[in-house]
Image (tube, rainbow, N blue to C red; front, side, top):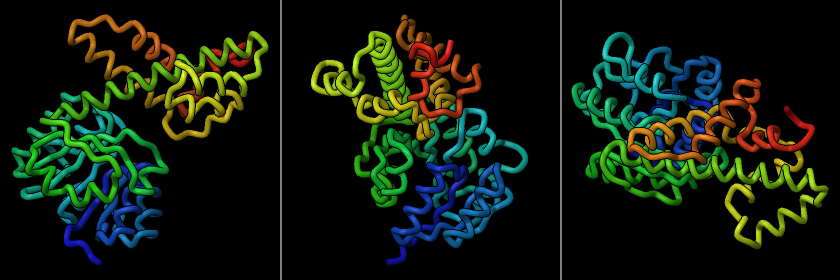
Length: 296
């Protein structure tokens, strides 16, 4: 069945590209894709029968609903620029679903700019990884106008097995920041536990089994524990992104007048990974800082 809405994507790295593939498989016309790395857009466009747009304005013109999956606040504000090439060019009536992990205030500013252009926005914050993007089983937290959420819900349901409306614009980003803050703290804690276990000469497979059955259990134990032990840090969620996301959460805490020492320490650990040139490793690579003999 061919779905009526035309879809486009801005930012077709591994997450954006797999979301586009998923919607194409579900019968949507994915009409245009755009990426600052042109070859990525060209390859995906050829694969799914879309246009590799060379301007942002071309993306908006080609679709009814535009997903953005960009890297950070600067990139998000850049694609919604108020001058020059922008997704806001002739954007009246368009719907933008913004999936990047960025500051809540940036989502609010993008909403303001879009409204001025006659368009609407929705946060589509993702708490899953690459395989889930391809399979349509993302955990999606949405923020913005409820009517806009209801309007695009059939599309989002093709991408998500756990779709949740959080509230007004900015609130989904707040929740996502807290999710990643706790996840990153858990990851850093697991790396220290396994690193100490290794230094004590314990069998790490046994230790992970004990962790799994006790209060040391966590989701990151299941996703990252074996990788930490085996030094397999193929990237699903990069240390650089962990540093960025930990900074967003830590900043929210500072703005709220809270002392968050665990969030601060985790932020510093991931920033250290970036400084050491390890930012492209998966977040499990934080174990390289804690296991004896791996890194100083």
